[in-house]
Length: 589
Image (cartoon, rainbow, N blue to C red):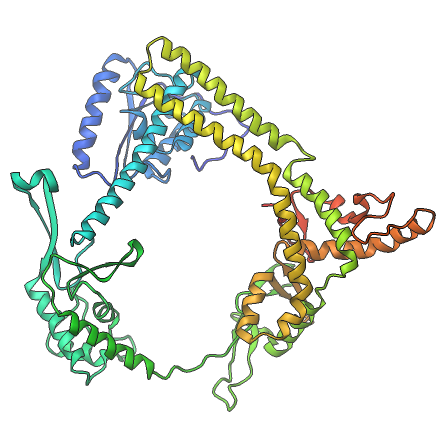
């Protein structure tokens, strides 16, 4: 959709004239200039020759229509807003875009600017006419469906080529991509063009020598790079294997060598873990540079070296990415871990500090201990569970739309719109303006939309119980989090904090405030509110209302609204966490 926001001021009167929009997909195999010439010829022959309006400008894109982030497309919308032209012409609807919702919104936006959109293959089609809009929307839908099917066919063809031993990507170093026309006998199976990889004589020699140096198991990968550099070799890109840094130090570029020593293409195997093609299952139809035994021997050498590598242990910061410092103006700055004296005996003293500002720093041990105390304070009294459930159920009903029927009404209105759209199309079908094939496709789409909306309505009835079950799980976690946290290892404590805590905020005095994630923040606030309300409820009961015998019921005469005054004061769509400045979504997603 357009990146331009609507303003209340009226748009300027557009200058009479045409804006031509030409788009060629980046995936097209034909030359873009030939495609644009063909589009321009159709536009001129079907529309411009019969119009008295001048051509004001031409906009060109070479990019898929699935994205609105096209330079020419966005420039067209910008010029339309300032009234540069009055009409836009494209060859056909899918040239304007392959995203039906985006394209229709853009057409509506252009109409607000006083600009009309026309399609050269159907000059009489008006996207703003209710009946014609059905055909335009169908054109965009079919274009998006075509893109989706093309992607499925492409991925299927790639997978079939892998399983037959073909290589579908850019050839690795040591090989080169080859494309050639197929002969008549193979054209039915392979198409007009066949693609494969073959050895690059110059580069294959370099790769083979690198493997030989590795298999000797006497020098490191860095030393292999030094040896190749001494022999006058470079990477395929022309980058040297060893180069001097700005400080005069020698730097070995070994990342490419690491990829080479782990690439199953070199022993001649097709491997794609993402697509389920495992090593040593499909033999490639290219000549290998090393044997399978040599490749596996190289893997063993690298694994043995990695097992004996001594990695310097870094300082462990429990709150990495979670801790923030509140400035005097109220803004938050992320804090990082720092151990300035790490070289001292014992590893030094770690701090949390603001990067680039040494005046705000706190001992990690102090902040970590304060977080532990705050976590242990997050508890739920079992006697409050009935009140929590009652208040939560009321909030959930409002959020799910039971107390606000607008969501249900919207879905029912959507069903009616499907029926109205079908009725309009029936008239077009009866008038012979729609073929049987198109009618069947549209009818199938309507049935799918009806079923989707109906399933959504049914799901709304079932979601409430699901969220009540989630409430029980969240209450169980909160009830155990204090004792659970203390018994975990430091790495597990870090993971638990990331599941429960959104941010840890530290003030000037070193006081810690936790912002909990949904639903823990909501439940924690709800518990605090209920604790404040409980004495008033008990006092009301003592005045004459008989107390309930069942701990799972609300006392007679006490409505669920009394359980949480906090929830009544805020929007049903947002619930505040413990920090009043930060909002958190309800559990009802």
